[in-house]
Amino acid sequence: MKELKALEGKKLTVVGYGSQGHAHALNLHDLGMDVTVGLRKGSKSWEKAENSGVKVATIGEAVKGADVIMILAPDESQPELYRTEIEENLKEGAYLGFAHGFNIHYERITPKKGTNVFMVAPKGPGHMVREIFEGGHGVPCLIAVHNDVSGDTKEIAYAWANGVGRKVGVIETTFQEETETDLFGEQAVLCGGVTELMQSGFDTLVEAGYNPEVAYFECVHEMKLIIDMVYEKGFAKMRDSISNTAEYGDYITGKKIITDKTRETMREVLGDIQSGKFAKNFIDETENGYKFMNEERAKYSDSKIEAVGSKMRKMVFSK
Ligand SMILES: NC(=O)c1ccc[n+]([C@@H]2O[C@H](COP(=O)([O-])OP(=O)(O)OC[C@H]3O[C@@H](n4cnc5c(N)ncnc54)[C@H](OP(=O)(O)O)[C@@H]3O)[C@@H](O)[C@H]2O)c1
View 1: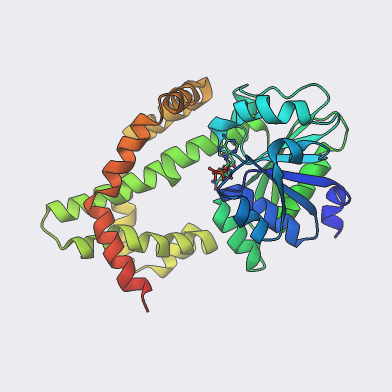
View 2: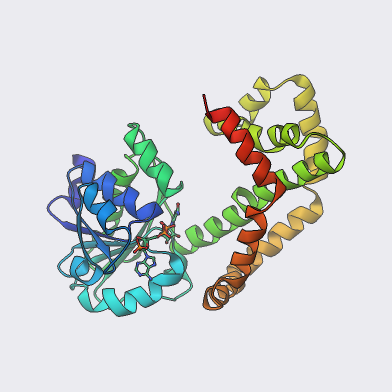
């Protein structure tokens, strides 16, 4: 296939077989590319990867002799992994890929001289990257080149993105832009912003004495239906589809919820990402054994909203 030409005849290695790893490896394998998955000895993913038809080797073995290596282990584990298993096995002129700019942008990994460095960041969670591909479609990808020794690193990035995302759309960016916008989007809007918004709406209704199941439908379940319309058709068409009552309430109330103070906080959040403060705090947290994150996980898994959600999902998805 023309769009994958730069990868044809090359040995491709995907390090890690988690959310992104399985999607990159399987999508490229399905398109006829020569893919090996690199995993640590005794990895719980070894059998799963082998059963899906890709070659599997230890990380060192998989990197040795590979032309293109995509690192898809968690961001916080990549610097040590690079130092201990990847660097010494990288051949001269290899192409080293990332799906997020974090470790290059914050200089936690400095690839050795003579290495091409690129990024292909699919704009979707790994499991959706695979599911959408299996359905015959793809997700858009951001690509960037940090180091181009061979003079064709951009072609490698395009080809990898075309394979993983089925050439749905590729946008060129930089490691800095991808890192800062990705961190901001997930914290302020997609993950942090949206979950707190849903949680606060649910709590407000429940505290006022309304049935938690009804509150869940209104503030959580229906989020997907509205967002699906925005995803497919944009804000205007979504507003076309909702009732005039809902649309009037949208204009009147949205700005009371997201106030100037919220926008100011968003700028502060962005400032902490740009200065590296967020990255430092996250690294400290990982070195502290994820203490804060484990406390938060326990708190949420025991929460009322999750208990109600579990019951509602059984009702909605059981038929
Ligand atoms: N999650 C997403 O949807 C998403 C979206 C866009 C970009 N990204 C980026 O993609 C990259 C991978 O993220 P992810 O969420 O896909 O990771 P993930 O699912 O947490 O990665 C798990 C995989 O990494 C391996 N792994 C974990 N720690 C390791 C270590 N210390 N040494 C070697 N292998 C290790 C695991 O091995 P075992 O199987 O042996 O446990 C497993 O195969 C990150 O740079 C992330 O920012 C992720």
